[in-house]
Length: 639
Image (cartoon, rainbow, N blue to C red; front, side, top):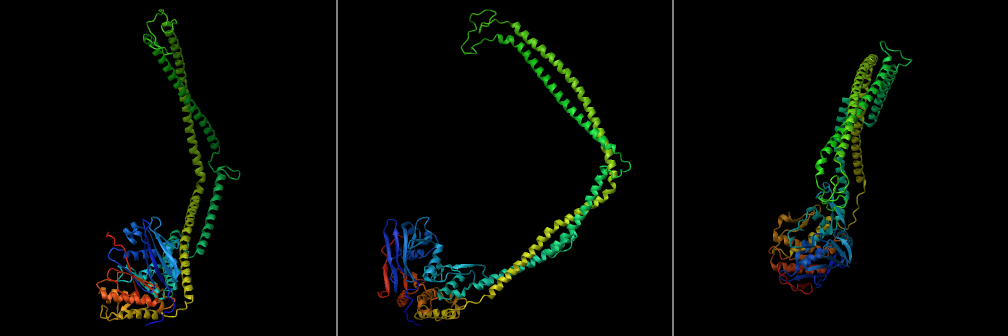
């Protein structure tokens, strides 16, 4: 199967060079050629795999710097960059290895987050930027997830962990999405109408289930409330409004009857000229009760005043008694303090000699005449005055106590009289109100019952509102399903069907594998199911039919076929134009087989104008026209 390659030679991605900047400012740079196989060769620990990891990191790896490049590279370098061409347009991708800037990708100096980088490069390559159902079946998927550039990169960057699988730790729905994008029918396969219809139908089913549950539960709740309160069972909000209006009218009527009866009772109790006095009722009792109440209040005020006056007299007597005691202590201390010598002058604090010369009847401190009898007599006169005052206070206190006792007696008598009159008035009023009590109690019970019914209506309305909301949700969900069903189907514009695309890709893989019959490959041919994109070897899925060695040949054939996407398929195919292989000598495949494979890949790159970059530690096949060897200059110590 061959096709002339006259166009699309620049489609996809090409790597021009990789640059690593050391902490010291030194630069390691590796240039790559297009239309041939570029082999990074050298012994172990010579940065071959690291160079591919740098390319991968510049392509928007969201992992940490250490996870992506390793601790040794992170410590050694401050910046890495990759010069690329996207559909022939040159770009430089740079990643800075400093904290705070590691989650940014710089495209020609412009800063992009690693999340935005995927959207940017898909747009530059003209590949569809799709969101696909997160699951194998759109009808059962619960959400959409982006099909990012990183997902596609894993299918043409085959690192050491992905030689026996399409991509390391890849979920099946992602694999199907990537293969459909590479083959050019992802747009039609993931037309979101199917997912939207499935989502709308799920929402409709959920809304219908909620409505059924609400219908049953609300009917039971409304019936229970209505039967308990004795109101009509309402099934709609209009019926609730009608029932509320009826109960409100009944409540207003009962309240009006109670108001009229109360007014009639008040007229009777106030002795209105229009109302006859009930038999046995003495209207003078009210006036007498008011007179007794006024006299009782005066008696209470008098008791309070006398209690306060007595308290003040008692306090004054205690004060006078304490003064008498103080004066007696003063007389007793005259002789004691007279014998104490004064050591310091109270004015200037100079020392005073008690033995200094002074008159017998003079003070040795100030030399003024001193007479002991005068001090005692003055204190005794003060004591006699205080005791006279104390006697007067005791007499006044006694009279006040007698007046207080008399006032309390009058107060108690008036309280008893007031209580007796209150009982008589209450008995007479009870006799007057007796004919009305049964009616008042009946009206109060009716009002309470009707008010309780009124409190139930908001709850019934809320319950019925839930049913209305559930019905509206069902209606809205059904309208959404109907609108999606009425949308016109997308008209296919691609020149090839999905079956034809799968067949062409499988044929290209078989072309490659045919050369390795009896050299590690089995006899089965590759076919691809266009519905679930399962790769079959013979009649069995590839992962069940192949062992480890043949799986490596299978993925080498898969990689080989991706180089021909631009020439085999149309513009809808996402042609990478680039193949990155990290140490294809895997799983014990004979070295000569791998050498022949690399030669085939080199010839394919030359024929299609694409690019292959590989790493290996064994001798490189010699073909200067299709294979370029890049020797790694430094062998680093193993960590």
